[in-house]
Length: 178
Image (cartoon, rainbow, N blue to C red):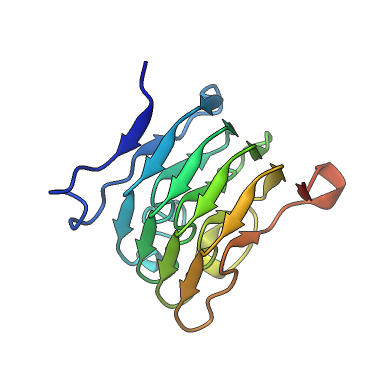
């Protein structure tokens, strides 16, 4: 089976080499025993208020459940205004009644970054919608027994060097456990 998803050396310097895009509520996904590295997006997400198309350097998910088990997310990035989540970006689609959820178990999230004005979540960003103008696209985030280290965010009005989560605590919200 597949053990690693990464961009080759020749494409690592190119822009928009995201590794995985999940945009269907029927596409709940579990990834196990993988290394996700070298994913990169570049662009100004302010121009697309509904999709945040340049978010999620390695993984972009909308209105679905993403479960990671024993996964390494390293060296992924986004660059550009409102390009969220250097490694992972997750949100609920406009008008969707279901939630979007990311659960991470026994994993390593290291060396990921965002760069750009309004960019947030150097490693993981959840719950953004309308490019910083609102949070209608809530998404839950839970991280269990994992290492999150050496991630960063750079840019004016950027937040969350490692994580930037906007979820509803009543419905699960953000949870960290070691």
